[in-house]
Length: 510
Image 1 (tube, one colour):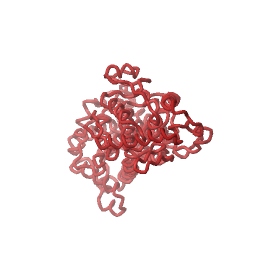
Image 2 (tube, one colour):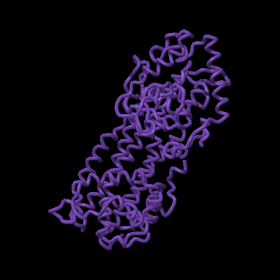
Image 3 (tube, one colour):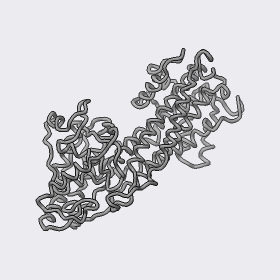
Image 4 (cartoon, rainbow, N blue to C red):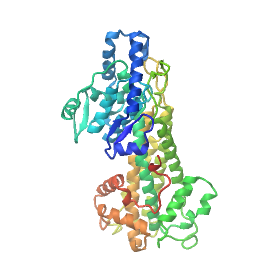
């Protein structure tokens, strides 16, 4: 059980709730904060103080004063009118992460909502009722308005959810879970949709997945080195320490340890003096990719515990301040930066695939074919990898450099952070497929070289994957293999991706 405080949520705890199904409850201290914050809102309403979004309209309508008798209707209207998302829904993992992050932001006690509202969010998390949230429609400022409005609908018994493996009406799911729909009161609709929780949730899920994929990429690159008799000297500690980038040093150390007892690597001068860059520069490239991940990690550790509502309530001073904490620029930059690391992980992997299949670049059977000419082997797998890499390059264009004014130019600069996050996540899926293709080719290459000569670690990995991937003895529909291995990489437990050391760049540090 995770105790929600609003200030102490970690990335590792989010992973436990999102992927592990851990339940959540509200701390007593957070309950008291929520009550104090709510008392300020209710007192100021009685005093008829003008407060944005509480007794005024929204956006360009901020100068329209709302009668006290209509304040609850104002909030309900807000949720319904802002639920304008379109396109395919986010995964249940991302939807669940959004619920958790929104609840955590509210329990900080600066949003003026009732305890009952946060408890409703927690009830959905614990019942595994996940709102159906369309992916498109957020500008990444004024909060993730459209996605968060779709998240809010099921609290009221409206909209759709995923529940027990089915997509259904929210009301049906609430009834099945014995949860009573909520009636919003003043400020609460606005508090639900003002925030960066859509882009941040995507960022958290992407961070969890990319850390795993990068570790797998190092292991698969090590297997490729074996398949191509790669020169191990390029990973010598002295070479990397003089440059000084810790992530580069770590990747080189990891490759050395992965291959410590391999009989398939070579030394400079044995077969050739130097390898191509896609082999020789693995630490430099993947080390830089790790740097983009670590930047995102540091940003997320702040953002997941941030107050991103507007206006914000400060109970001690009874201030109600309108500002712009909902603006997603920090997350937008981090996700755009991550896209570079994801793109380059795929880029260098595809170049190693080419070296594995191109008979002009190795002494392996052409295209790893069991019967070259009659059978094409892995020829078109490289085409697929090249296509995915090219698509990544178009998605890698920074979304955060764009801005389109909205709300009659009142909201005249936006972050496009959710677009940046969505593109990064799409690129991650593409990159996992590219890495899967490299794994298929690397396994075929080491099989040709002799799996008894592999290192103990890469052999363990090879043995874990083989039940999912038969050896290529003849041409077959390789799309099935690619998707099968891709799924294995996504769900593989750490025990099947054995490291001889604890990687210093790890989600568990967070």
